[in-house]
Figure 1 (tube, rainbow, N blue to C red):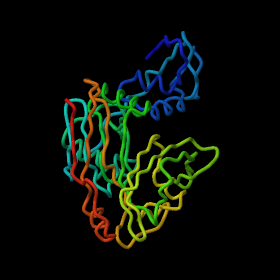
Figure 2: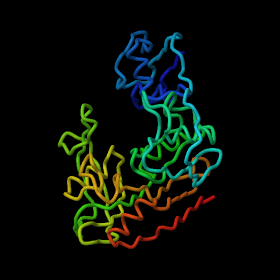
Figure 3: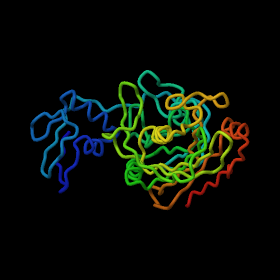
Figure 4: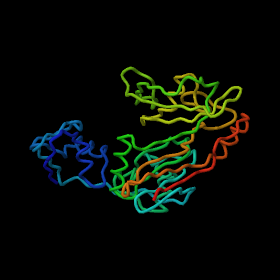
Length: 309
């Protein structure tokens, strides 16, 4: 397999390969380089961040095999909010992974979706059609791509911050009225699988809106401008108001057995028509019971889904 880089502006090698080899991710391309399958201008390269220049010749050994989908479709809890030939939007329940991981290939949301419909091949072998994710114990709106065209379009929309997400959460204590937006540098610790605030981290920006207050908790609407791992949970913990029930960045709660975080709505441009689409997912029962326990009346729990088509 051979490519000639013809763009005037430089591009990372792993990103270029992922764009040009159907059905592979950047992580897969990195593994190709690690195994000595990739050369640039007749010299093997092991650096996925290498910047390609116009005229560079990229060659990939014929010995490598494209990944295949070995994820087993499973019948499970699947609430479809919208679906057409390009995308599917679902309401993810809390307690399940978004997609399989090594050693955990069953019982994920992706398994359930594959029993319902086909997804894009990009992202194989474990993440076909996955353009973003929700933590295991976070519920709510999530998009999957059904075609490779839609996959790359949505990935670019996330990159360009066209996709808008609104979360609902309950945090410990009385959240201050004056905080409407905050930016923090976040860094992931690979050894602890935990994110923390560090000066050397990547910038994250989060917006807040207070919905209701109780005696010892606050019901918030949270809008992440950036999309860092665990961004909402880490930011709120840093502010001294961790998400209720978040035992990673806060503490367990006697009134809810997971972090009280729900991806309430998501909006994006349809990959084909470019029309605005907005979908919302009704609050799950455990979240509503939490609000009732705190004597908080829910605000607009009725989904107002609009395809814009």
